[in-house]
Length: 239
Image 1: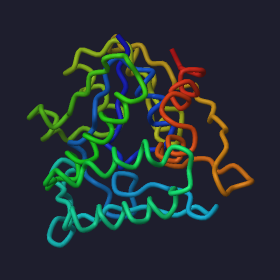
Image 2 (image 1 turned 135 degrees about the horizontal axis):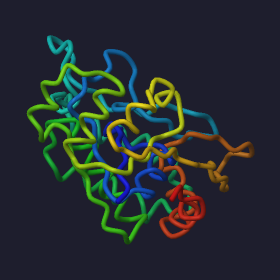
Image 3 (image 1 turned 135 degrees about the vertical axis):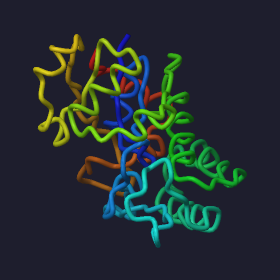
């Protein structure tokens, strides 16, 4: 049983879903403090006329310093998501799979989301189901009072989370966040840690001659569709 851990990001990039699909269970770190600055929990890159553009979902910040991700409220969700959909429409209207993918994103206007976490997680789950037939389970650290109030940080907090959810095999990302990990603590606590092996797939991006890495998963879905996106991710699973 492979577990991975990640914050519930906003329409995440392709590498995020590669890690999700390489897992049996995904623990969503929604009990940690949301970044006071720019964060992937509220923004992601898309391609707009061949250039990178940030797509952002606004949240309420006034008076909420130090709030956790699970406590963060969306700001006028339907109005702002409709604006985002307008940007996505302009960016991908001529993409081969726009008519297939856009209604999936648009359907979230039917929900009265109040919390950022609920919106992000529902999108992540929905896209995961599109890309995989595997029944991947999503868990939230906010469901545990001990994790919600824990003062542990970095490796110690990950270890505490693993212990709560009974994690024996932990799949970690291979990026900046992995640099602080104290690997000996995992071994000491009986947790086998492995690292994601991800090669970014290259595909034809409409209106763009030079391929741009790190876009939201919707860029790949719009350009090559669900089936080919799934194939590209399956071709380099970590496990």
